[in-house]
Length: 164
Image (cartoon, rainbow, N blue to C red):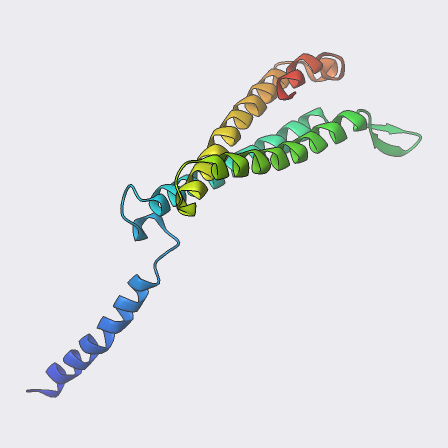
């Protein structure tokens, strides 16, 4: 046997445990689990929820920026409608806490003794609520954008009621 063949054989034999170890460590991706299992389902839904949450954060940030009317008076810059901006920000924070609590309850009420299915149900709830919130936020944003900038301060309330 040539040295080259021996080297290739040694590399192959050394690589097998590394590959096997890497697969044994695979727990954090849906493809690591059988399709239809609680872990596969939960991890897929977690990915979807993270994507929706990022979209929601971006849309919320855009809405806050849009309704933040800055004024300068006596050389001092201030938010003309600071109370509204703070209320929208506080409401979003409260909504996020509500979503987490609501979905934890839904998950814990789900049938089955296996906590992995209860976790999957909890994440499914988070996907549903985040998707609903994102739709409301997008609708409010579109509505406010349709109002002329000079008229927003007095006419955007009907758009923002969609968030309540």
